[in-house]
Length: 236
Image 1 (cartoon, rainbow, N blue to C red):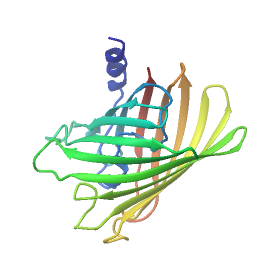
Image 2: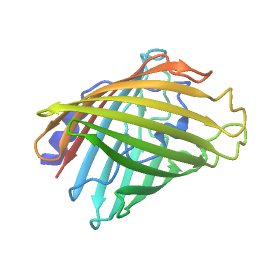
Image 3: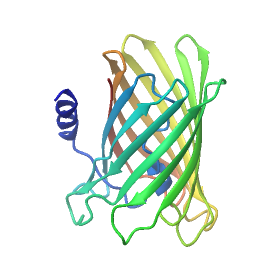
């Protein structure tokens, strides 16, 4: 019952689909690039809305299970609602993550179509957190995607890199600034996106957080216009 109440509360936040957003960004059960969770079970629900399609909403959801201090399994689904959306659950995603002694996480995700008209996708990624000062950390995330769900025009590979410096002034509040670049091996310039993503993160309870972020385009044909996101992570 407790988990159902959390899910229903999070689903009331409105969110959306971006026509220009590179699909490599959405290839993981993690709704943002991150390392291993620290608790046994973590529920994540996000809402995304794009300024170019305000009548179309995306609400991805996932659950992560900590199998051991170093191994995590996860699964999730992508959903699209409103507007002209006629495929409300296009993909399921399943993944596994391993935490090395260096505190670097390595991850593999499989994107499985819920509709026969979609292709599969497979991605490999790594994530590392750096500690710079008592109030300043940063995260570096790299991802490569393969197969038809994550690339366009038969490209060999899509890729994404993101650097997320985070200011922690004290208390439950953190301020993050994401710098994200993505493209693919074929038609590199046509799929290039350089975006900035400021975010406010509020930590509550022991292992739960609420994040509000907006991705804004800097350069590239696939850059964002404005893509707003609300993300809830709740640990049990």
